[in-house]
Each structure stands twice: as structure tokens, then as C-alpha cells.
Length: 418
Ligand code: AMP
Image 1 (cartoon, rainbow, N blue to C red):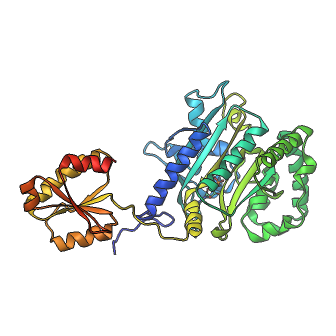
Image 2 (image 1 turned 120 degrees about the horizontal axis):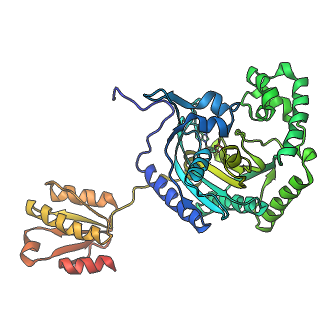
Image 3 (image 1 turned 90 degrees about the vertical axis):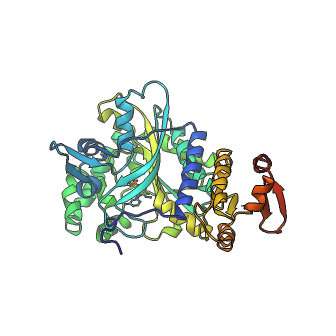
């Protein structure tokens, strides 16, 4: 075994699973683009300040999970733990936000120093979207429906959508007060983190991972619905009504808060039953105050992120089959040494024409090449040796029927193009 191993909580994505990753990322990009989203790629490393201000200083992510260190000039930098803050930073820096609605999607690695377990890593990948420039509840519904349709498009059955609202600033203030009062009455039962966060950021008590803390509110959670302003209530009702019209099933989940500070109004999370205790496939919501809090103009925004590792686990469970490596269209067999070079020339033309070709670039017995051709899954082989050279042709052999036919290079090219 190598002396040097990958870091705990990181993973190599190896063939044949990597083919599934490719397929999923390609399909997801097309899906997002059908909804008018454009790709954005931001750096993996940012000033730490970005995440302190956006995600919130009292969150688990910022307090315990960030990969933060000083660069060689002593500046505090952080490997991004999530994508939204980065997209907001980029959109503001390049003045992409204005009158028009702008939609961006991203995919790539995120870093959180969490305790690794199935479906939880320290480096993991997310697929995410952000829409800026609208406060409309219909945009929330469109975003949620895009996420649900994405899973359907990938053939992933059995997802559940949990939805809740946090309301606007006024609703949240009221809710925090009610929650804080209830929490204070149970002060001793909470973990030290929760005790400390109770006064500063009481909402974080609802996403504490400590089981005994979870229990406290489980059967006795003050309802946010009772604290909503009329406007916030109307916003939420419109979202739900639109989801009903689009045939999107959801479960209203009052205890859902999500672990980041920037959310307002609609929040949602999608789970899948194949994922065990780490069952959240993705989540998101509206975050109307984030751009302004980062120094921009008030900008309505809504988005979500999906965990790619969990998506692959769920897809593999549903598809129930090992992903197979994609077979080549043809395998080139070289009967003598000269044929290897000739086959390489032919493969060059075929591959340029978009055909996938397998061949051995070194001397091997005909028997061994046919064995490999069989194993490769290619439906046919092209054979080249002394006889074929004499006639200026290749012998095309269909693997299944054993049928053979002589072809010139030009005939081969037009045969495969068809
Ligand atoms: P969040 O940014 O926390 O809302 O996470 C969005 C999604 O990313 C989650 O629903 C998970 O699918 C995925 N995710 C978050 N943290 C991790 C992690 N440590 N390892 C793997 N996936 C994660």
C-alpha cells in the first residue's frame, strides 16, 4: 500500500463511478440551462471574512467546520464551505446584478471539517443555483419545481420535499423572541453551544445536532406560522398554491430552519430514503437580505444546493446496478508490428470523426487482442495484417454474428459516420 494516502474525509472518484458523475453533471447542466441558468465558476479559496459575514458567525459551519488558515502574507483565507456566498461575492464584484433577473449555476468541491461518515465528507461536491433580482413567491415555486424535476429527470424516485417559511425580518424577530423565551425555560437541558447561542442567535438551536437538544423542541416547537406578518403569510401561501398547481408534492415541516443565517421566507430541503441518517440530498431557500448585508443594493434572491456524493449514492441505490465503463464503438486489431502504426493512423481519423476507438499501442498476440476486444464490449473489430495491407483494406468483423467484410479506409469512415 502507498505510504501516502488521501486525507480523512476526502475521496477519489474512480472509474466506473466517475462515468456516472460525468453523466449526471452533464444532464444537470442541461437541465439548469433549460431554465435560463448560466454557469459561474468561482475560486475555491476566498477571504475568510466573506463566510463570516454571510453564513453567520454563530453557525456550526463558521464556528467549527471551516478550513481557515493564514496565507504566506498572514491574511486569513478559507476553502469555501458552500457556494452561495461565493456567487454573491462574484456577482457583486463584477456588477452582474441590476434591473434584470440573473440566474447562475455552479458545481464543484466544498470543504467542511465535519466528522466523516457515509454521505458526509470533509471535501464534497455541490450542484447549486442562485436566482437574483426578484422577490416573487412564484420564483420560489419555480426553483423548488426545478429541483424536483431534476431528480425525476435523473430517474431518482422517492424524494421528499420538506418546506417551511421563516417569514420576513419582522416575523423572524417575533419568532426569535418566542423561541428564546421557551429556550430559556429549558436552559439547563441544552448543550453548551446552544446555551451560548440562545441569546445571540436562537434559531441555531433548532439545527443543533446533539440528540438531547433536538428532543427539547421535538414535541413542543412554537409555530412560526403564528408569528408571520400578513405579507409573509401571503408569500408562503402563494408558493404552496403554485406548487399545488404544478403537481409538486411537499410536506410542510415547521421545525426546518437550515444551518445558515442568511435565509428569509421560503426554505426547503429534499431527502431520500436510501441515505440513512444523512438523508438530506439538497436544500435551499430565499435570502432577500444577503446581497444588501454584503454592501449591495437590496436584491431578492433564491437558490439551492444539492450534495453530489449523496445524489450518486441515491442514484446507485435506485438504479441497483454497477455502472459499466462505456464500450468503444470499435476495437482495432493489429496482426503485425507495422499494423500498429497503421491502426493508430486510422484511429486518429475515426476519433476525429467522433467515433470511440480502442486499440493496443504495443505488440500483442492476436488471441490476446481478440480477448480484450471481447471484454471491451465493442460491437465490432477492424483487423489489419499482411494480407489486408496487400489489398489496401481492413477486415471488419461483427462480434455477435461473426460476419466479415472488407473495407477501405474511406468506406470505414463512412460506415461509422452512418
Ligand atoms: P447545505 O449547504 O448545508 O445546505 O448543504 C446542501 C447539501 O450539500 C446537503 O443537503 C448535502 O446533500 C450536501 N452536503 C452538505 N454537507 C456535506 C458533507 N459534509 N458531505 C457530503 N455532502 C454534504
